Length: 236
Image (cartoon, rainbow, N blue to C red):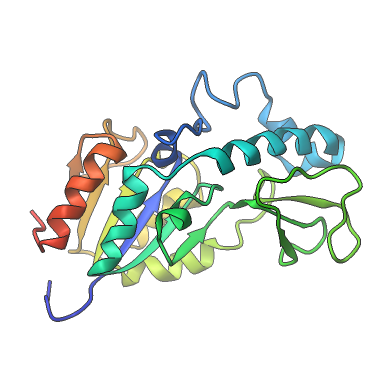
């Protein structure tokens, strides 16, 4: 890399980076989703079937996310901005990256602290940790709903993310199984020859990481070490 140019690092993060802040991951056998049918609480069909149940589920998640604190991995990503142009693409609906100090974050699956119009996905309101109740209205008069992307809905930010990935000089994957599309397909947009890191104790089963540098540690342990190296321009 040319040290005279501010290189672009693109970081793709998933639930694993927030798990170390106490937020259960989507696929944990003992996690938050245990006992819930995702078709009932995380699909557009479930919303039309039982809005109150869906609202209750996300009200709990919103409160938990508000109480969580950024961990060392979130802070390490933000620290990279001292010397790099950094874009975070996250599958997470929490705002821990922003609270850690990251300034350029693309939320593929929405943002839990926001509500949105039932009809207009671009009409959002900031809720913080406040619950949404049946009858709460968006500014256009429709029922307020969580600003999250459910199964059965398009992922509006995926096009923006797909435009960003090919501009990366260095690419990282942190805390994601790469089992959920279309987010998992973003790795295919990286330019050949760039440095790519996987920070994960294991290896995602459904993806080949040949040619990647694999740091087999948790995000909160491995990422601060990698950030320190990168700030010293050590890419090995």
